[in-house]
Amino acid sequence: AKRAILSILSAMWLLKDDYEQMVACQKPEAKLSRSTWTAIQELVCADFTDSQLAALVVLLGLRGLSKNSEFAKLCPPSERRSPETVLAFAVTELQMYLPSLASLPPDGTNYVAATVRMLGEFSFPQFLQAENNPHSVWMLQSVMKV
Image (cartoon, rainbow, N blue to C red; front, side, top):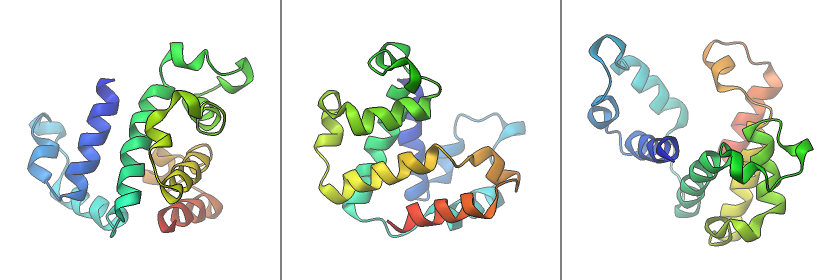
């Protein structure tokens, strides 16, 4: 739960360009640099619609839930391989357990579903190390345009 909350807060700080809040609890020797902050801002901060922002908050909360072993038990064993497969199954098959997803407008639900599909194939750590193949980068760009 703490990671999900931190993810949501981090997204809000990023969208509000609140660098000071983002780094407030970081150790000085490991603090996110201003230049990296600016690069991240340029990459991910766009003009989000209200529906996309709501979908982002729901998605970050659901990602935290997908890492919970008790919640994962609601999925068949074949869908418990990773938090991403739990999340993908939950978004399509367990909507009755996810009232926050049901509260989204249809375009917000589509945004969550598209992002979940992308998360199953796109690795942000690989991206940060310039190890993604062109198809993975295209998937990320496609989801960000939804």
